[in-house]
Length: 138
Image (cartoon, rainbow, N blue to C red):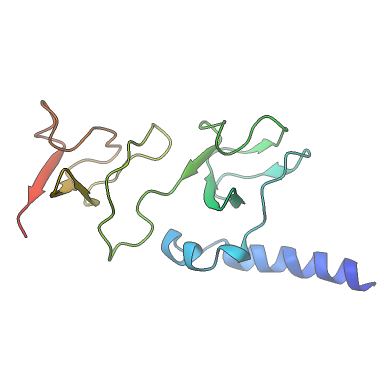
């Protein structure tokens, strides 16, 4: 087996061993995950890929196509919004592929908020979201 073939084999082993990492750990070691390819690559739900400096999680099995980038195909890829549970990030507008989960905390408009529901895509503090977000007194 040549050096290049051995390197490819090792790359697959690295990615397989990195797969069960938490999102937090995966973001600490993004180089363990392959760069997204639009060249007919088979992706499985739960796989992780790097694209434009961001780590994405595959949401459903598919064969990649050039125009199905992680940024342009939200039904196929989701970006992690809460990468580190010990840090409260600024709120970002999620979509249906990467909503906030119950217990996630974010900062928004100078306040800290905790999500009260899974699948939360609503803005903290907006009218009508009292059952979805709770302001945290610090």
